[in-house]
Image 1 (tube, helix red, strand yellow):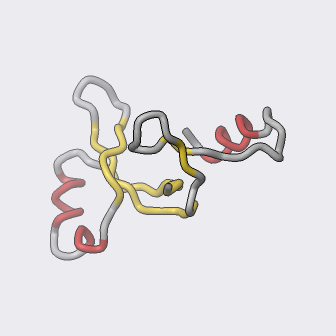
Image 2 (image 1 turned 45 degrees about the vertical axis):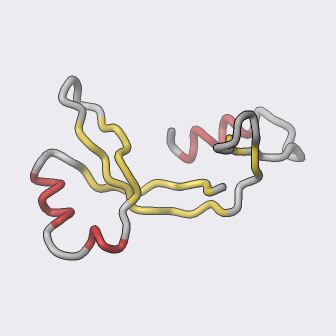
Amino acid sequence: MKVKELIAKLQEFDGELEILINSYEEGGCETPSSIKEIGIMLDSSNESDSYLIHWEIQDWMTEGDYLHEFIEEGGKVSTGVIIRR
């Protein structure tokens, strides 16, 4: 989902409603603690040209050849927005 798609979807609702995120606890929900832009690694799906989000880029991943090797193996580096609970 893209930011513009999320905004369009959210505009369908009353702007005064609370935003909740599923919790790890059964049936629980929490309010978001932060929203920020992050680097993400996308794994190429062997069955199609689409990419699946694999994980958030951590500081240690930018050291050495880790990201370079990931890209050589068909992965893609991009940015996204994460909502943290």
